[in-house]
Each structure stands twice: as C-alpha cells, then as structure tokens.
Image 1 (cartoon, rainbow, N blue to C red):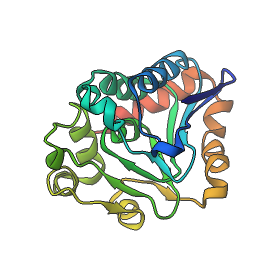
Image 2: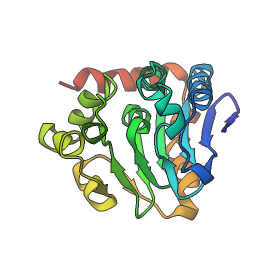
Image 3: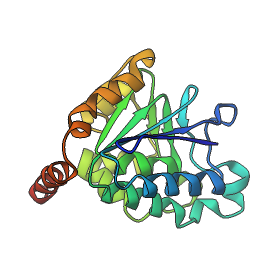
Image 4: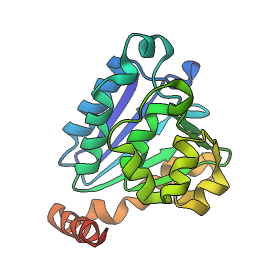
Length: 206
C-alpha cells in the first residue's frame, strides 16, 4: 500500500509492502501518481519506503500481466519532474527496475548504507521508460548509464555517491528526519520563490 501524509506544505509518500520488497502493483502505482499530482501545491515531496528495500519495481505477477509496460511509470516520473518544489527520494534500501524512474525524476536522492541501484532491463528483455535513460545519463554520464542499463551492473552505495547517482548517505534511523531537514528552506519559502530558483537551475542544464 501507499501511505500519504500531506499537510499542504510537505507531502510524504511511503511505499509500505515490505513483505514483497515494496514491489508495486498497478493500484499502488496509480496511488503514487495521484499522490504526487495532488501534492502539486506542496513545497516539497519525499518518497520513501518501509523495510530494507525501497522498491523492487513491478510486482512479479503484475509484471506478467503487463505492468512493466504500463504508461503509469512515465506518468509518475513526469509528475515528479514537473513539480515546482523540491522532490526528494529517501531510499531506505535497494531500488530496482521500474522504481528507478521515480528516483531519477527526483531533485535529490539520499540513501542508507548498503543500498544498491540496478535496472535490469537488458536481462529481462524490456526497454526502460522513455525518460529514464536521459535522466540517468545526465546524472552519471553516458558510459555509467550503459554500465547500469546495458551491462546490468548493481551499483553499491559508495559508487552511487561518487557517480552522483545519490547525493548523501544517511543512517537508517535518521533517513526521514534528514530528508525533512533538506526540505526546510523550501517549505518556509513562497511557492513562487522556490519555482523561480528551480527554473533557473533547469535553464543552466545542457
């Protein structure tokens, strides 16, 4: 299930299916999309999970039923990338497969020690979601993007930090509080101020 906490300024979306490695069903993916879209006026959004895995991507049975090719993945990452405030992925553990899209679309990524990042589309015979390769290459460069998408490498926390794939390593007990602290300034600013600064950064990108 997806837990939503939204006070109008800060929205926290939590994936809570730890017995299934937080793998996502179509219903859960829809809930994430709606949660992000309804938090459009919030100054910041935090994505996190319960347990030792952020998300293993699509639920196995749901994937067999076609979820791996669903437009919901792109809808979610698009909603995150268009959000005018600050979006933070607080990774409580490994992120894999389709779940990478929402993580790549966030402005900041923090992770607990031991987190691994992998996207086994080559091995599984799928294409990544359309926007994922460009976002990944922008963060880590084309060669490292190919290491993940084509060579199927699982990237450990320390390498992910060095590559720029994650921005900070945080102890599990401090993860959510640290994410909230990163959002403090933007949550106390006006929406227009946050939107303007984010727009200036976007304009500076190649």
